[in-house]
Length: 267
Image 1: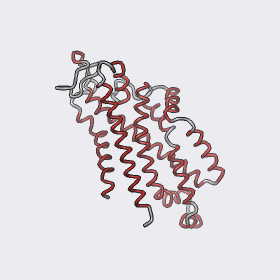
Image 2: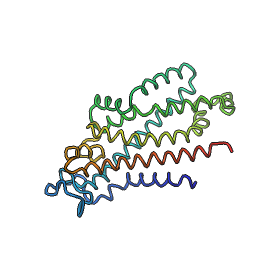
Image 3: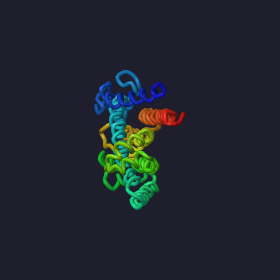
Image 4: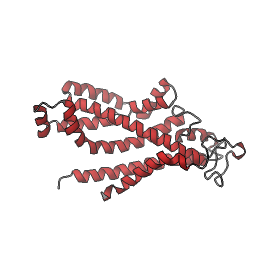
């Protein structure tokens, strides 16, 4: 349990930031203060203001709920979708396996962000389009991991016995496949959570994500781009928030992977 303590700490901090960040905001995120536009950090505005005089700290804290919350939703949708597809490939026989994996390979042939931008561009800018685009391009790694582990489990004695005993495929997946898949899928999920934060911020920066005036880290970068030379702090704050969160999640995923590997290695 001690080796997982950093994982729990980081998870708790990110969850607290997403849930309670808006309550810590010193000002309303969309309150306009034109006389103090582009103000330097200090006083009423600890991180300064943007081009419309809005408090950057307040927008960062409110944006955490959108960026982290949407990333959690997108990565979880990908987890469920990819796991179901991977199980169908592992348990459905050679023909289904071949078809499913060829479709997966086709999706993997396109870079995630490029495909997400195309899908969001076709559907139109908005939060719903963002969720669909990132979910549609984020299930393949779960499917490949599930399928790879599932094919090995299919030959195990307890799985063969369960099949001969007449258990339904759903029951076999529930009691024999999912417990064995959980550690590996958890590690994949942490990596995809970091990728989802980057994807949400990238789509927001390109104008395909959460729409203004809703505060989100990617849209904050888009708004600050015009004043990048005169007031670079406007871009540094949301950009730094994205980098720190992604770095923390990736490091946490490494610790989690090492801990789970040690537990599963034979003595």
